[in-house]
Image (cartoon, rainbow, N blue to C red):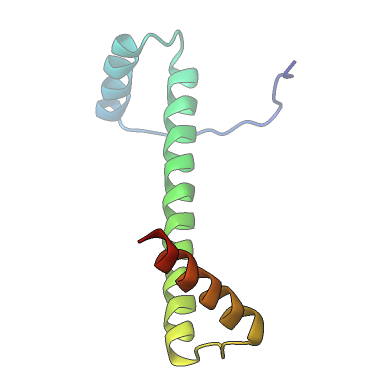
Length: 94
């Protein structure tokens, strides 16, 4: 069961921004402006964090790929045996 939070965030907005938020609130189904703003902020925060993680993972994967191309691993005996078994398996299927 979750507990009530004690943290508070306050902000000042223009009257136009408040009207916009209240209009969106009336369309959203939320009961308070605070819950609407909190939900919107959390949703956007999660999206930004996920996007940042995706970019980092893509960059890390790209660097690993380039590194593998620049310095390929030498084939050891275990790899060569597996490659021969694979080739034999494919030959026997024909």
